[in-house]
Structures are given as C-alpha cells and as structure tokens.
Image 1 (spheres, helix red, strand yellow):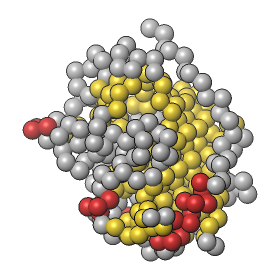
Image 2: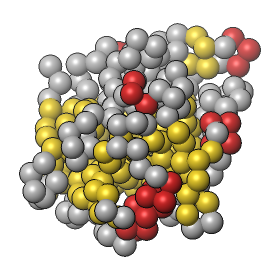
Image 3: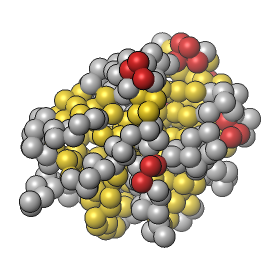
Image 4: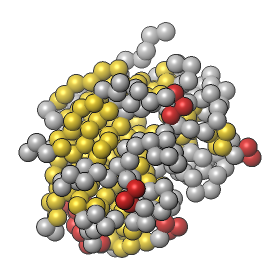
Length: 312
C-alpha cells in the first residue's frame, strides 16, 4: 500500500495528500505525487490513473526520457511506452522508478529523500524534495499554493541528459518536468497566459512549447496556475499543456532541448501550483502571480545538502 501524508496550510485546511506511489505497477514508473490537490473550498483539481493514460497521477515530477550511462535505451520515469523515432511509441523494459527512501517533517514542510533508478534497480540520481502549502490572497480571491523545492544530484558514473519525446523527434510532445494531470472537469478549459504585466486567454497551439514564467487553466468550477521561476536550470520554462481530451499542465524544461547533468553535479529547482475556486478572470491570474511573488513560500528550511553517493 502507498504511504500517504496530509499537506495542510497554517489554519489546518487540507491542500492535498502526498503519496509515495510505491503501490503503482512497474510499467507506470512508480513515483511520489500529490492527489487529490484541493482548492480552498475542497474541490479536487487533480486526476489519478485515467483510462487514457493510467500512469498519470496527480501532481509530481516525471521525466519521460533520460540518457543514463550503461543503459541501452533512455530511462522512462514518466510511465507507459517510450517514443523511439520512426518506430513511434514502443513499450520497452525501461520504466524506472522514484523510490522514497526516507521522509521527515520540518514544520509543515514534508521533506523526502528519493532515489531515481533504472528498471534494473541501478541508482543514477538522488533527490531531496521539500513540499509545503500556504495561502495567497489577491483581488479578493483566495488561492492555495503548493510549492516544491527539489535538489537533483547525479549519482551515476557519467553525465545524464534529460529530454522528451520532442527531443527524440516527435513535434509538440515535450512533456516532462513538474506535471499535473488535471481532473476531467478541466476538459475544454481556457488557457491563461501572461501578457504585458497582465494576462490573456490564448489557444492551445499558442501555449504549447512557449516559454513563459507561468501558465494557468480555468474551468467552470476551479482555476489553476503553475509558476516556474526564471532562476531554474535552463531559464524561462517552456510549457506542455492540453485543455481538451486529456487536460494536463506541465512546466517542461526539457521540451525542446536536452539538459545535461554532469557526474556529481547538482540541479536546484522550484515550482509552485496555485489553485482557486471558480472561474477566475484573466486579471485575477495576474494579480495572484504578483501577490505570490511578494510572499515567500512558507517552506521550513529543509537542510538540503548533497545526498551521499550510493555505495556499490
């Protein structure tokens, strides 16, 4: 059974449930994630194991294509098949896992130590991930904000390269990074993007692959807004987003180009997801971004250091 842990804001309201994912099948690339992710009013904005892609689950970190020394094909930590150029998607024995080794509470912050492993069990990356929730108020709207800070250390024997189906040759399939599978209620939702200090609605074609500091979606019952600081590796993040059929939102730093991590090197990331009840107007998204940028996430210092290199 998957271990679960509530993630709450200061006044005790539940913002989400953190799961270690260990009960997922190997083909789904087991990994920790949050589900449900809740609005201040208690509405879930996330989905888990949908019929179209059963390896999708809630909010987490998932990468579809990782070049790892010693592995014949890229490691898949997204789940399901791997894109292989002219062959298309092929189910290979390359689905790895993110395994939670230890966790601790630091105030209201959940801190996990996670091994990233190939299908053969070999560890190639170690991560420390801190996750916390707080409240952002802007333009008379209350948002729950979930913030994740993550440190990746190359624990393998050579450089790693993080990519996507697009870096493998499939256009507009650059998924991989900080990923939210949205609830079915977001099917047909509006995509909201920054525009000259404010915000505007744009089409899925314009949103897909574009580099922006944030991106949001608005349904009739709830609104979501994801931010990716420009100080993250690779700079301003591209986005993978679908608003119809399979609603999802992903800050996708490896959309267009692979990102390399040398042996023993470190990558530090931060992402946030803000969720609100109702169909927030465009200006409300922009106001939330401004308010959030002025409010430091209430993540207790996690003591993130360099995880020890695994012994062999």
